Amino acid sequence: MQLLIEQILNGLAMGSIYAIITLGLALVYGVMRILHVAHASVYTFGAYAGVFIFQATGSLALAFLGSMLLCAILGVLIERLVYFPLLKFPPYVPLIASIAVMLTIEELCRLIAGPQILTFSAKLPFPDLDVAGVHLSSTLIAIYVITAAILLLLWYLINRTELGLAMRATSQDMAIAGAQGINSHYIVSLTFVIGSAIAAIGGILVGIYYNQVYPTMGAVPAYKTLALIVVGGMGSVAGAVIAALMLGLAETLLIGYLNVPFPRDALAFVAMIGVLVWRSEGLLGSR
Amino acid sequence: MNPALLEVKDLSIHFGGLRAVDGVNFAVNRGEILGLLGPNGAGKTVTFNLISGVYKPTSGEIWFDGKRINGLPSYAIAALGLGRTFQIVKPFSTLTVLENVLVARGITRYPAPSCLWTSWKSRQEAQAAMALLDRVGLADLAQRKAGLLPLGNLRRLEIARALAVGHKLLLLDESFSGLRHEEISQLEALIRTIQQAGITVLLIEHNMRVSMALCDRIVVMEYGKKLAEGTPAVIQQDEQVIEAYLGRKGESDAS
Image (cartoon, rainbow over all chains, first blue to last red; front, side, top):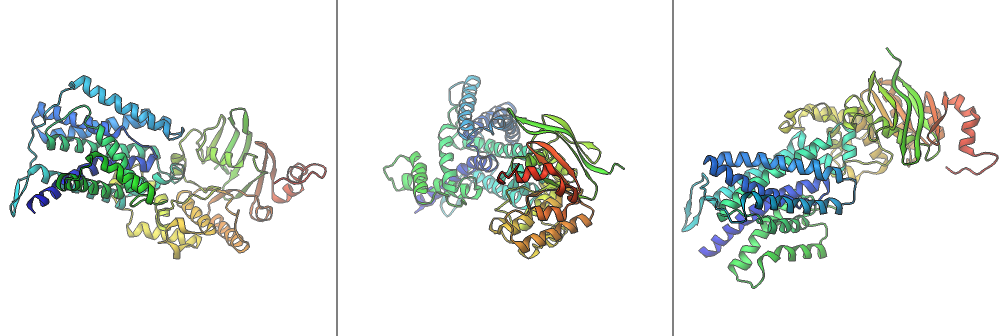
C-alpha cells in the first residue's frame, strides 16, 4: 500500500514535469500552428544555464531567474530568426527547421559543456515531509508546488487578462487580430518568452530531481511532448496538461508498480495512436 | 481641414506580372459613404487590403486623416481609427460574441504592459461592448459562441468589431452578400445610422440596388484601374461602366 502511494506521488511528479515541458509546445502550436520540436532543446539549455549559474553563484534563485531569462531570449531568437520567416511555407518546412535548431542547440551544449553528465546537487528550499509513513522529499514537494503555481498563473493570464484575450484572438487568426489592433507578432514573441521561461524551470527541476544534466536530456521529452499535445488536443493547453499528468501516472504505475513488461517510453505513443484512431481531436481539442 | 479623410494616390501593387491594382486615385470625404464597385477581379478587395495594411503597395501613397499610412503594419493602422470587415467572415469562433467585441475594444491598451494583469471583464468594458452589440442588434446573443452564429449575425458581429476599432473610418467588404431581403434592409439602416454618428464608410458592394441607394458617391474599378467616379446617378449613365458590367455589343454578363 505504502509503495503504491509512493509510486502515485512519483508518477504525479513525473507528470508535472511532462506538463511543464509540454506547456510551451502547446502554447506555440496554439498561436503559430508550428510543431516546436526545438522546445526540448530550450529545456536542455535551461538545465545547463541553471547548473552553471548555480555553480558560479551558489544561489538557486539566481539560477532559476537567469536560466528563465536566457531561455526566453533563446526562444524569441528561434521565433524571430527561424519560424517567423518560414510561416508562409507549408508546416513541414518550419518543422524540419525546428529539428535542425534542436540538434544545433544540443550540439552547442555538448561543445561548450562537454559530453559528460553534470551533477546538479542542489536542495530546493522546501521541507521534507513524512505523512503516515510516506516520505515526501523536498524535491517532490517543490515540483508539485512550482507546477501548480505555473499552471495557476498561466490559467489566470490566458483566461482573465487582456493579454490572454489578445493571445486567444491571435491564435485563431493573426490577420484578423491585426485588424482589431493587436500586434500579433508581439503576441507570438511573448508566447515564446512564456513557454521558454517555463521550459527553463522544467530543465532545472529535472536536473535536480535526477541529479544530472547532459546534452541529450531533451531527446526523450522532445518526442514524448509531441505525443502529449496530440493526445491532449492540438493547441489545447488544458488538454496537454491533463494528458501529461495521466502519462506520468500511467508510466510509473503500470511499469514501475505493476511491472507490466512494456517499454516505458513507448506508452505515450500507444496513447497517441489510440487517440488518433478513436478520437482524432484529442482529449480536449475542438474540430 | 482637408475634406478628405482617406486619400489614395497613384496606388499600385503587382503580384509577379499581375497588376492587381494599377495607379488608382480616389479620396473618401469625411462623413460620406463611398462605394467601391467593379466586376470580380477588379482589385477592390486588394485595395482594401492595401489600405488596411495587409499588403504593402508596390508604389503610391495612402493618406489617412493627415498621416501617411502605407507601409504601416495593420495593427498600427487599426489603432488610428480604421476598422474593417472581411469578405469571408472570420469571427474568433471559440470566443463568445461579447469577447469578440472585447478583443477589438482592447485596442487602446494592447501596447501597454498593464494588459498583463488588467482584467478585460471589467463592468465598464462589458457595458461599452454591449452598447456596440446593441447598436448592431446582437445584444441578446452576447454570450453565444461566435462560431455558432448564422451568416447574417456574423456580418453584424464583424461590423460591431470594426466599430470598436474604427471610430473614424469603416471599410466594409461585401457585407451584404449572402443575406436575405429583410436582412439587407436592416443592414442598410444600420449603415445609415453609422454614417449619422459621424463615421465615414467605404464599402465594396456587388448588389447594384443597395449601392445605388446607400452610397453618396461611387468609384468603379476594372482590371485594377479606376474606370469612373461620381454620384450614383452619374455612374448609372456612364457608358464605360455599363459596358464593364453588361459586356460589349450583347456579350453575356459574366459576373
